[in-house]
Image (spheres, rainbow, N blue to C red):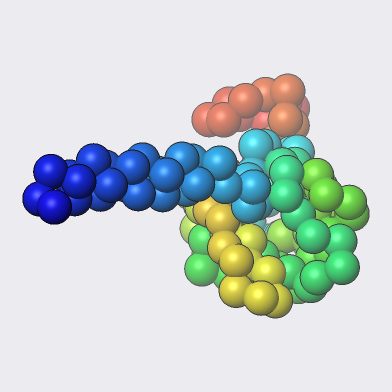
Length: 128
């Protein structure tokens, strides 16, 4: 009997590992634009996969909750950015009504000035 336990346990572990690796949950790929002003109130598209149009979502930029967020298909969520107290890179976190959560780390840059353009890149000064 002992000889059958090790192969059976290995078979179960390999099976569980493959199930976890094939997860079809939510995934965030990018934000457009990936930066904006600290005063917030800008529209951002969160692009990814596995979003659920029939469910509500709550989205946080750093510690601040977006005032509006809605799923626009299985690959896009549209939000309005919340105001933020300092210029910094923040995580973007999406939570569905059923508790599923996904985070894109340090993915949105809050900036001091409204003169910034996505074409300038991070850290570039606005054109005068």
